[in-house]
Amino acid sequence: MRSLRIGSMRVDLVSEIPALAFDKSWLFANVTDEVIAENRSWLDHRYIEPETGRFILSHHSYLVRAPRWTAIVDTCCGNHKKRPRVPAWNDLDQPYLDNMRALGVAPEEIDFVMCTHLHVDHVGWNTRLVDGRWVPTFPNARYLMGRAEYRHFEAAHNAAPKSPVNHGSFADSVLPVVAAGLAELVETDHRLFSDRDAALRFAPAPGHTAGNMQIHLNGGHDHAVMSGDVIHHPIQCAAPWLSNAADVDPAAAIATRLALLEELADTPSYLLTGHFPAPTAGRVVRHGETYRFRFED
Image (tube, rainbow, N blue to C red):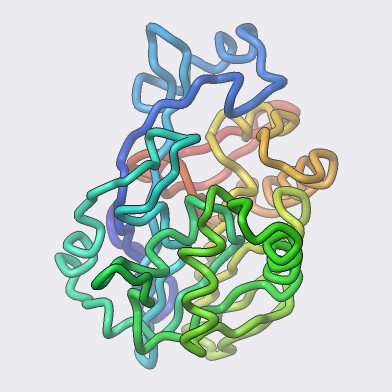
């Protein structure tokens, strides 16, 4: 993804896993071969494997730099974390921090870590392994997490401490941040900055998790939405009713997705999702009674 300018903010992509193929029914239990076939004309091999029909996702963060602050949004899977149920996420050794440094930012320079939700593939780099302990990767940052989201998973963890919540990520990627005093629990409509050229706010995005959120950037006349997992794959623009297996409330997730697509359709606003492969950024356009995604090459 090329750098984007939203007012006085610069947005860059920090890659962890550029392309990872998932079985179509694992990602969307209600997908059909007919839906895939109908959308192959605009979703090429970068997004759907030609031979298998598997969906290709990216795992990445967004680095946001404003004149007064620097933030990272959603921190992927993380290195050296045991995730045996999903081998593609298990015990990774990825150059994520090197990719961030190549953009000119060191972990110590991050002021805010923003979590749209607390699933395993969105919190991994919250911590890193140092001398056998999980410690915050961004030691000078405030980690913003949804209050309802955190309390939901905290309750699950406390009810069964030996059972790994979110593949174990709550214990190794969330609780160490809380123990370090760096976590800040926020409401789903939390407004962090209101500067005319660098405004940032959370917005509720119910359905995927108990306290799912998306993030809006506004600068002057520019606007972008970082939607987390409201939309996993561009095929959901054409078929918004495709439900991810991890959605806790599929009906609410569909309603949230439709509302976002309708809000952005045929506008200059950017949609920055949690998993679209390169070139990742783009805009929503109407296509008959549904939508498509126009990538920014």
